[in-house]
Amino acid sequence: MAATALIIGVSSQDGSYLADLLLAKGYDVIGTIRRSTNFYQENIVHLSGKIKIEAADLLDGESIARLVRQYQPDEIYNIAAQSVPADSWSHPFYTGEVTGLGVVRVLDAVRLFAPHARVYQATSREIYGNVSGVATEATPIDANNPYGIAKAYAHMMVRCYRESYGVFACAGVLFNHESPRRSLHFVTRKITAAVACIKNGVRQLPLDELGRPLVSPEGKVTLGWLDSERDWGYAAEYVEAMWLMLQKDQPKDYVIGTNTSHTVRNVCEIAFAHVGLDWNEHVATSEALLRPTEIAALQGDYSLAQRELGWQPRTSFADLIRLMVDADLARFR
Image (cartoon, rainbow, N blue to C red; front, top):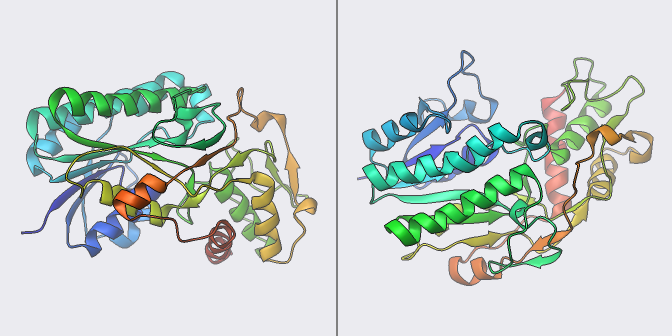
């Protein structure tokens, strides 16, 4: 009999890649999306007829509990969140409700209605805030923005339910991970989409996070701090780590990263060079896109995951950016 997995937030970048992975392993997959009159979700169009889609929302605990009761899943992956750190400043209450308390609604539904289920919770490098250097599972939490603080709460509640109620729950402290399925609200995808639009001379432009055309009439994309530094990996590989965590005999939290770091400037250099353009001629900066507080440069030490899960990153940073540019060249014409 096939194992059943519930993916909360299946239309996200990670949720869609995870669905691909689990289907390939023979799972029956149920994926949740938020209730909407628009059921078109680009990331999961290819999954039509392969997974079951249900409407649920982390703000509505009963909608989550209903699915846990009904399907009795063997594995539950909570990928859903208000996941844009910059937006957490303008929506701190919503971020706390969804990204923080939403996790407790999932964990409590499991405790009450499917105590056999194994739970994966997506937490984030943002829980470390201003810690710099290299992060391990023992690195102190020092979140400094509403998103990171909500994720820190979620991370600690995973441990609480694991130790207090015996729930098999794992938290993956994932460093930044990107792909062609990433939202345009994230800087890597914003850059690669802009490169494609400029190169292809696109007239019907997508909008940026401020609601403006992604590329100005002068052929420029507007970014924030170019020297902001992150540890960036490939999302399709990171979901493998999620699955591996739930196959262990005992639940544990793991840091998932590449132990490297690069700047936004580096993304621009690689992305524009890939299509033969000079990034200096096509990038502008604006203080409107700066965070109230920036996070320090930090790399994710994946050595524990490598030893205990057999996981390690395989795609280089430069190759990741190039594959995103190629996907956007095909998407925006």
